[in-house]
Length: 219
Image 1 (cartoon, rainbow, N blue to C red):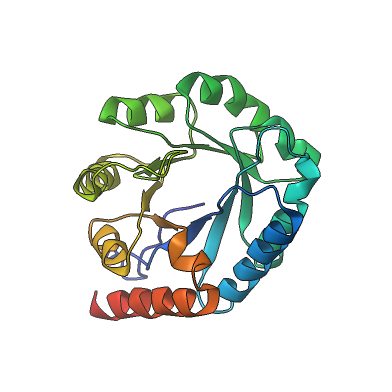
Image 2: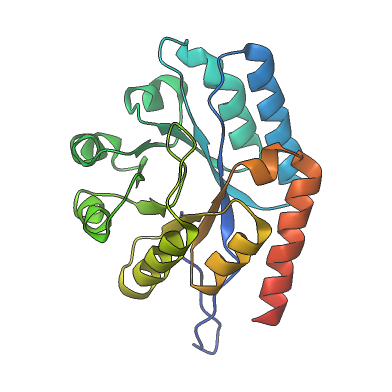
């Protein structure tokens, strides 16, 4: 997960951010298979950089296999939420942490090839601490386990602040197309989505692709 490039004339430019898809946690194999197919359908319409795989407590790790296979099939990194031990077990590409202590202890074990991401960042200090603890990216605004998220205005402000000052990429969570556009405008490197993809995989992804393309043409 890398930042956008620059033009050959050295004038800075931002490419449209790629997507980071947050997969809802499920235990039902049929539901997981449907999610995997949804990823494949969405990827036919829009560029997906990474997929967050969320294991349920007590569920077999292998249940995530179809989602990881789908992630790799579409050229996306498969990131395991909160369980670095599953990275090697599943052949995933990294882990995502909502706790600073877990990130700090696990990040070295994922090197040199694995990705260590940080979310659950409720303050600017949390985000800076995550970077100090080895985070390869920081994520702002994603929903918690109960579906609650910070006010979008806060997510937008944090994303703009981070993009202007820090090197590790930032991911901003969007629930609507208008929020996607707002995050792009303030410099998000990646945009995290869930319902925009899973409620209507092909149509939702097409709408995302069209909005991102329009933003790119206007910039």
